[in-house]
Amino acid sequence: MRLLNKEDIVKVFSMQDAVESVKEAFLLYSQGKTENPLRTKIPAEKYGGNLLFMPTYAEETGYASLKIINIYPQNISKDRPTSFAQVVLIDAGSGEILSILDGTYVTQLRTGAASGVCFDVLGRQDARIGALIGTGGQAETQLAAMVSVRDLDVVRVHDISKERTTAFVKEMNEKLADYETKIVAADSADEAVEDADLLITVTPSKEPVFDASKCKKGITISCVGAYQPDMQEMDPAILPRASKIFLDSKSAVLEESGDILKPLSVGIIKEQDITGEIGDVLAGKRKGRESDDEIIVFETVGIGMQDLITAKAIYEKAVAEDVGSQWN
Ligand SMILES: NC(=O)c1ccc[n+]([C@@H]2O[C@H](COP(=O)([O-])OP(=O)(O)OC[C@H]3O[C@@H](n4cnc5c(N)ncnc54)[C@H](O)[C@@H]3O)[C@@H](O)[C@H]2O)c1
Image 1 (tube, helix red, strand yellow):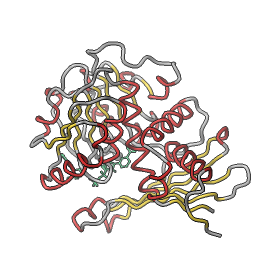
Image 2 (image 1 turned 45 degrees about the horizontal axis):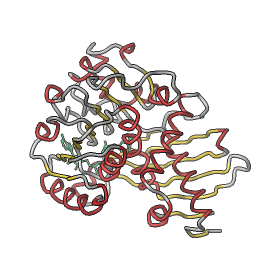
Image 3 (image 1 turned 135 degrees about the vertical axis):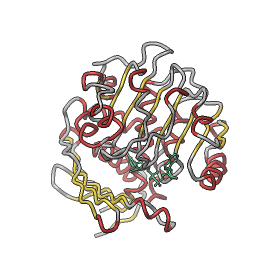
């Protein structure tokens, strides 16, 4: 079995690779070619955490996987990571466990790549201004994905913690210097969102983190954080203005995400207002952006297939380049 830590993965796998993997994952998923049961969630109420188990199988890939990801939001105040994860990659032909991959990094890559796919497929081609709300564990790969699919002049970053925003902006200007996009701190969400062509929200918030009235025509919004019914980052007022609403997985979002469930429950939108899954656009079954003025919203809660296809692609590259360490 091959053990692949973050350092190993960085050696063989880029954000562009992740975006291509997640495109494949969304396409296979929306074509119904995957076994992707809803994740099993066991609340660890005493500790304010959630234990999550995500099994998945895609026959035509020859692989299956299980991700274990434990989300403990209160850890941030103890200066500890808010999630711990591993991905187990399985040879579906023999059942052999082939690899254990750093699940935290695979999650960051494939979650960032979901926004990357969203902007690549649905964003205006001439997008110049990006906005990012949230600077926690997922934020770096979100930003990397955003700048890797569009040639942006500036990305404005906002977080309720000014200290984290300042540190994040400094670090990202160094790490993503090759993209020549200026990354700047915004004192408020309004300042970040003004004139933005692309917007990512990636927080565990239970209240909307931006004001829809500040969003301009033509914006593409990727909402990443709200994976439970009581969570909500998206200002629901954006939904009636949006010409298209895409999801990563209709069944998962309608089970889990307050961003969509809350507006549905109070009648701001109806289920038929949901355009479809992003995989439908990749399959050519639905139209993506048809004009520069359209407001398009994408909601992602994350599906096991993203982990499977990303882990498979990393593993195959690691084998080809003999990266990682052997166990057993
Ligand atoms: N869609 C997916 O596939 C997927 C995958 C992994 C994580 N997530 C979710 O994404 C969210 C963010 O994950 P993370 O690991 O970066 O979390 P984190 O806890 O590490 O960081 C969250 C950041 O959001 C900031 N924040 C909170 N409320 C805010 C607000 N109202 N305005 C601005 N900033 C605010 C916090 O200060 C913090 O810096 C979580 O809810 C997580 O469960 C989604």
